Image 1 (cartoon, rainbow, N blue to C red):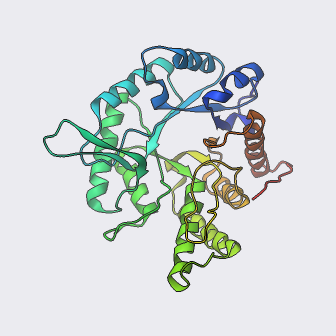
Image 2 (image 1 turned 180 degrees about the horizontal axis):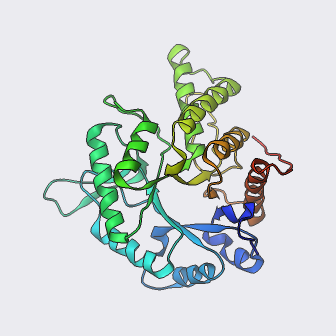
Length: 317
């Protein structure tokens, strides 16, 4: 049982199908579980049955990957209808998606081309207008505000003219939504900028990891402290994978334990933002459920320390 107001009541895990039965059998103390919306768009079947069982014991946060909120071709009406039905069915504590685009439709064409990834937006006034309009459409349909997540991006645009943090703050204020602040994405982006800087001066050289982590930490903290606390509705924590070759990028694949650098930034986030619902994500090379619960325990311990309590804390890079 999770006691209201306890640190555990603020921490959840991303629940993937292989862990569902173990979670229901164990019923560990968690504040919520997060599920990918699109996995439950069917009208029936085993997935929806499992969702109903989970919802009977835990609050559910719905996190999507397919709204394509930054798409100039607009929001897919069929996709939004399915999401709206799911929201009515389970009454989630939060609904979120990414500040990105993933679909393109030619003018006058009924067919859209869907990407296999979450593609970054240009940080410009024009793209912000599109993003705000699409968010407002989704919120009008769902009759609730949503959260938008900052992206791990492996490219940037020459016409970027607004710093990312400012772009997201302006978007949230204009659209009336909140930010889902992914701290791991901030670190991954900073690491890749540091790696590119090394390659510019010494092509093919493996950047010093400690130096890259230090630079990424500074960038992430600058981003964090520029975000008004009232705009953040949830925090994501996850792990990343170091590349096996010098000329490759760090990948945000959610396949590892949370990095000590990210844990450190999380502590700073609690200081700046206050106690925010926090999710542990793990999507690739799933470990036993106990590993995710241990990560959730570390997040709850960080909240305990923020309250002035005592909590031991260890994590592996």
